[in-house]
Length: 190
Image 1 (cartoon, rainbow, N blue to C red):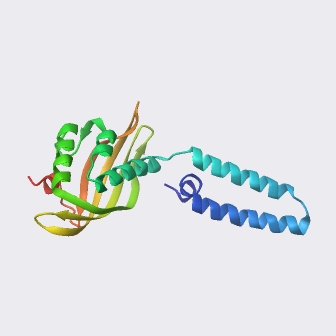
Image 2 (cartoon, rainbow, N blue to C red):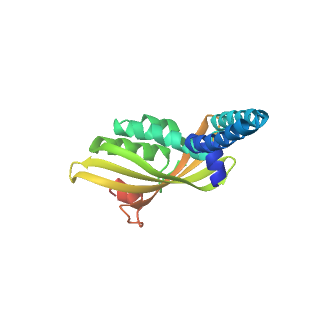
């Protein structure tokens, strides 16, 4: 995503700083010239920019919203958000949707997630009705056989637009603690 698209579509803080600086310059211009039209136009453009940013939800924001809901449920050892947001057809390694959901349920019974934060979310491929993101997470988990562990992971997630909204169609592990030759066998224990 370009910097301009990020400023105007995704970051209220960046847009606020940009609009604030522009409006400050127009305010100074108004005070020196007593011409209010540029300031009024600037206020209208700033308001329209914030309205546009609020109305447009980018693919990256869609993915972020879905992943936020999943993170919240995983911290409570619930698979509800995953069940809601995993589409059909779906694939994760050699697993279909049902096999994947069974793996998630099994793991949530044996692993306790104490903290989970996303530190990266990048669109890697984009089309109007589907896209892929790379997402990085840092978590603190307890696996009974290994105790408390900090864990840094990276995932590739494929999303597709369905009649019910955006759904995850693919999840693949990319790295585990910097090791890149990981697969679902690493996570499933097979």
